[in-house]
Image 1 (tube, rainbow, N blue to C red):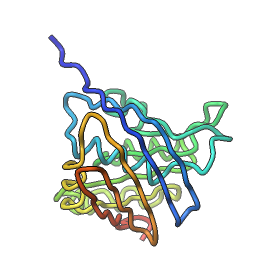
Image 2: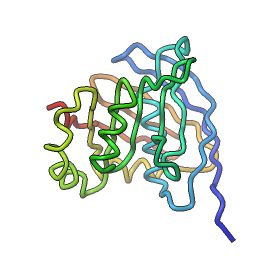
Image 3: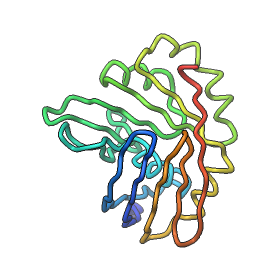
Image 4: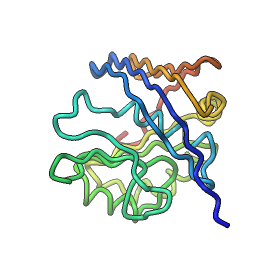
Length: 184
Protein backbone atom coordinates (compact mmCIF):
# COMPACT_ATOMS: atom_id res chain seq x y z
CA UNK A 1 0.00 0.00 0.00
CA UNK A 2 1.36 3.40 -0.98
CA UNK A 3 2.00 5.96 1.70
CA UNK A 4 -0.07 9.12 1.51
CA UNK A 5 1.05 12.70 1.80
CA UNK A 6 0.67 14.44 5.15
CA UNK A 7 -1.38 17.63 4.97
CA UNK A 8 -0.27 20.78 6.79
CA UNK A 9 -2.41 23.89 7.19
CA UNK A 10 -0.53 27.17 7.45
CA UNK A 11 -1.65 30.71 8.17
CA UNK A 12 1.20 32.60 6.54
CA UNK A 13 1.88 36.25 7.28
CA UNK A 14 4.47 37.99 5.12
CA UNK A 15 6.10 41.35 5.80
CA UNK A 16 8.88 41.76 3.24
CA UNK A 17 10.29 45.24 3.75
CA UNK A 18 12.95 44.68 1.05
CA UNK A 19 10.37 44.21 -1.72
CA UNK A 20 7.38 46.00 -0.20
CA UNK A 21 5.27 42.83 -0.05
CA UNK A 22 2.77 42.48 2.79
CA UNK A 23 0.26 39.65 2.76
CA UNK A 24 -1.77 37.15 4.74
CA UNK A 25 -2.30 33.81 3.04
CA UNK A 26 -3.91 30.51 3.99
CA UNK A 27 -1.75 27.68 2.65
CA UNK A 28 -2.36 23.96 2.46
CA UNK A 29 0.85 22.06 1.80
CA UNK A 30 1.18 18.34 1.26
CA UNK A 31 4.37 16.79 2.59
CA UNK A 32 5.27 13.90 0.31
CA UNK A 33 6.17 10.66 2.18
CA UNK A 34 9.76 10.90 0.89
CA UNK A 35 10.08 14.56 1.94
CA UNK A 36 11.53 15.73 5.26
CA UNK A 37 10.15 18.50 7.46
CA UNK A 38 13.28 20.46 6.57
CA UNK A 39 12.55 20.41 2.84
CA UNK A 40 8.85 21.15 3.34
CA UNK A 41 9.69 24.17 5.50
CA UNK A 42 12.10 25.39 2.82
CA UNK A 43 9.28 25.21 0.28
CA UNK A 44 7.27 27.43 2.64
CA UNK A 45 10.26 29.75 3.00
CA UNK A 46 10.51 29.96 -0.80
CA UNK A 47 6.82 30.89 -0.95
CA UNK A 48 7.36 33.63 1.63
CA UNK A 49 10.51 35.00 0.00
CA UNK A 50 9.19 35.02 -3.58
CA UNK A 51 5.48 35.79 -3.28
CA UNK A 52 4.52 38.43 -5.86
CA UNK A 53 3.30 41.78 -4.54
CA UNK A 54 -0.10 41.19 -6.14
CA UNK A 55 -1.95 38.51 -8.07
CA UNK A 56 -2.61 40.56 -11.21
CA UNK A 57 -0.39 38.21 -13.22
CA UNK A 58 -1.22 35.01 -11.34
CA UNK A 59 0.22 33.74 -8.08
CA UNK A 60 3.14 31.68 -6.82
CA UNK A 61 1.87 28.15 -6.20
CA UNK A 62 3.17 24.78 -5.11
CA UNK A 63 3.74 22.44 -8.05
CA UNK A 64 4.47 18.71 -8.33
CA UNK A 65 8.27 18.96 -8.38
CA UNK A 66 8.83 15.89 -6.20
CA UNK A 67 7.00 13.46 -8.45
CA UNK A 68 6.77 15.22 -11.85
CA UNK A 69 10.04 16.11 -13.57
CA UNK A 70 8.27 18.65 -15.79
CA UNK A 71 7.27 20.80 -12.83
CA UNK A 72 9.24 22.73 -10.19
CA UNK A 73 8.58 22.83 -6.46
CA UNK A 74 6.85 26.20 -6.88
CA UNK A 75 5.95 28.27 -9.89
CA UNK A 76 4.40 31.57 -10.77
CA UNK A 77 2.39 31.30 -13.97
CA UNK A 78 0.54 34.19 -15.51
CA UNK A 79 -3.10 33.91 -16.50
CA UNK A 80 -2.15 32.48 -19.91
CA UNK A 81 -0.04 29.70 -18.37
CA UNK A 82 3.34 31.24 -19.24
CA UNK A 83 5.89 30.50 -16.50
CA UNK A 84 7.17 33.72 -14.96
CA UNK A 85 9.12 32.19 -12.06
CA UNK A 86 10.31 28.60 -11.55
CA UNK A 87 11.50 27.79 -8.00
CA UNK A 88 13.47 24.68 -7.05
CA UNK A 89 14.31 23.58 -3.50
CA UNK A 90 17.29 21.30 -3.07
CA UNK A 91 20.08 20.37 -5.44
CA UNK A 92 18.72 19.81 -8.96
CA UNK A 93 21.07 18.64 -11.69
CA UNK A 94 22.29 20.98 -14.41
CA UNK A 95 20.05 19.46 -17.11
CA UNK A 96 16.94 20.19 -15.07
CA UNK A 97 18.12 23.75 -14.37
CA UNK A 98 18.97 24.51 -17.98
CA UNK A 99 15.63 23.08 -19.11
CA UNK A 100 13.86 25.27 -16.52
CA UNK A 101 15.82 28.34 -17.71
CA UNK A 102 14.51 27.68 -21.21
CA UNK A 103 10.91 27.42 -20.04
CA UNK A 104 10.67 30.24 -17.48
CA UNK A 105 11.49 33.92 -17.43
CA UNK A 106 13.20 33.53 -14.06
CA UNK A 107 14.56 30.47 -12.20
CA UNK A 108 15.50 30.41 -8.52
CA UNK A 109 17.13 27.59 -6.56
CA UNK A 110 17.19 27.42 -2.75
CA UNK A 111 19.80 24.79 -1.91
CA UNK A 112 20.45 23.55 1.60
CA UNK A 113 22.29 20.86 3.57
CA UNK A 114 25.94 20.45 4.37
CA UNK A 115 26.67 19.28 0.82
CA UNK A 116 25.19 22.35 -0.92
CA UNK A 117 28.54 24.00 -1.58
CA UNK A 118 29.95 20.77 -3.03
CA UNK A 119 26.87 20.39 -5.28
CA UNK A 120 27.22 23.97 -6.49
CA UNK A 121 30.95 23.68 -7.24
CA UNK A 122 30.13 20.65 -9.42
CA UNK A 123 27.55 22.37 -11.62
CA UNK A 124 28.44 26.10 -11.44
CA UNK A 125 30.44 26.08 -14.67
CA UNK A 126 27.75 24.14 -16.53
CA UNK A 127 24.96 26.63 -15.72
CA UNK A 128 26.97 29.86 -15.74
CA UNK A 129 25.56 30.90 -19.12
CA UNK A 130 21.99 30.91 -17.79
CA UNK A 131 21.26 34.61 -17.37
CA UNK A 132 17.86 34.10 -15.75
CA UNK A 133 19.12 31.79 -12.96
CA UNK A 134 19.60 32.71 -9.29
CA UNK A 135 21.03 30.22 -6.81
CA UNK A 136 20.84 30.79 -3.05
CA UNK A 137 22.27 28.65 -0.25
CA UNK A 138 20.57 28.28 3.10
CA UNK A 139 22.96 27.26 5.89
CA UNK A 140 22.18 23.75 7.13
CA UNK A 141 21.85 24.97 10.75
CA UNK A 142 19.18 27.43 9.62
CA UNK A 143 17.25 24.91 7.52
CA UNK A 144 17.34 22.37 10.36
CA UNK A 145 16.09 25.01 12.80
CA UNK A 146 13.22 25.74 10.39
CA UNK A 147 12.33 22.03 10.46
CA UNK A 148 11.91 22.35 14.22
CA UNK A 149 9.01 24.77 13.66
CA UNK A 150 6.99 22.26 11.59
CA UNK A 151 3.63 21.18 12.90
CA UNK A 152 0.33 20.20 11.25
CA UNK A 153 -1.28 23.57 11.97
CA UNK A 154 1.08 26.54 11.82
CA UNK A 155 0.85 30.29 12.31
CA UNK A 156 4.02 31.31 10.45
CA UNK A 157 5.19 34.90 10.26
CA UNK A 158 7.89 35.92 7.78
CA UNK A 159 9.62 39.24 8.29
CA UNK A 160 12.25 40.11 5.71
CA UNK A 161 14.63 43.04 5.95
CA UNK A 162 18.12 43.65 4.52
CA UNK A 163 18.24 40.16 2.98
CA UNK A 164 17.50 38.35 6.24
CA UNK A 165 14.25 36.53 6.98
CA UNK A 166 12.94 35.96 10.49
CA UNK A 167 10.49 33.08 10.57
CA UNK A 168 8.45 32.81 13.73
CA UNK A 169 5.86 30.39 15.04
CA UNK A 170 4.55 29.64 18.52
CA UNK A 171 7.39 27.11 18.92
CA UNK A 172 10.04 29.79 18.39
CA UNK A 173 11.78 31.87 15.78
CA UNK A 174 14.54 31.23 13.26
CA UNK A 175 16.77 33.71 11.46
CA UNK A 176 17.52 32.73 7.86
CA UNK A 177 20.06 34.59 5.74
CA UNK A 178 20.23 33.23 2.19
CA UNK A 179 23.68 33.50 0.59
CA UNK A 180 23.77 34.22 -3.15
CA UNK A 181 25.86 31.72 -5.12
CA UNK A 182 24.79 32.79 -8.62
CA UNK A 183 25.06 35.28 -10.11
CA UNK A 184 28.07 36.06 -7.97
